[in-house]
Length: 125
Length: 217
Image 1 (cartoon, each protein chain N blue to C red):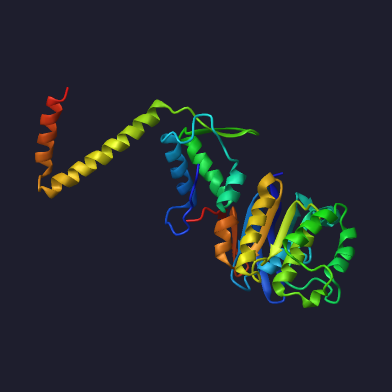
Image 2: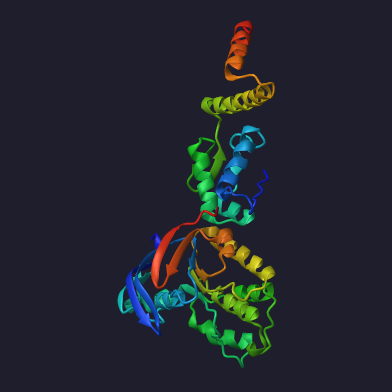
């Protein structure tokens, strides 16, 4: 697992860490049960404050991606259905977004698109 | 014990500097940056924390203890890095160490030797030949060599070259790894803060502006 911190980004450090770990977990780059480095160790490695990594781990825990055991550390959690749904929804949103951009280039309005989607929805089954 | 340093309604007027009704806490196991413009009262506050000045009113507690009763116990556990010359200039570092070491029960000679080597300090040159950066490193080596639980530093990075400043920040990261040591340091170089500081105490004209978690943006 490699995390890169940009000091020039407008995004807070903890968000950069959350995003990258989340991505690694969802992409299965780090497996279920994998022990993450301690907050203090990660802070040292990334050259950020402990409170930054603490906040990142808290966010990841809240999202159900990791769990922590006092005295033992933080581990990658088994992924829940909700999370996978969210993941899929994100893909759909992205694809639809691209489609809509394409439609707009063709000067199709919302009604045209809805009609088209309706037709295709009926056909697919 | 969650707060290592605790100031409650501290007032002090001294040499034209004033600290007004100052209250804040410094959390155990974290790094707190103490910022404010020149003349804001940072050094006065640090002197109050070190019991080099007594407050006109209010209370200063370190490790939950009062200086009136527990001065020795408190000082034993503090490593202090000061920005002014606190050494005898005509002595060498090794001579200076011989004066300071007996003051601490838990002085660790081998730890001191490790830091001296790491900081590349000459042991047998007179301290008056040291540059400001070298003096700071010497001060740091001494402050870190008696297993202090609290490290207090007044403008530690001001005279450091950029290379050592990075090393210095890495060293601070190393120190807080076990979650037992607490670091409190003043600075006016805000870029030091986003790499290390967990909490910020911001002083303006002797008054506390805010104290908060520092999540660099």
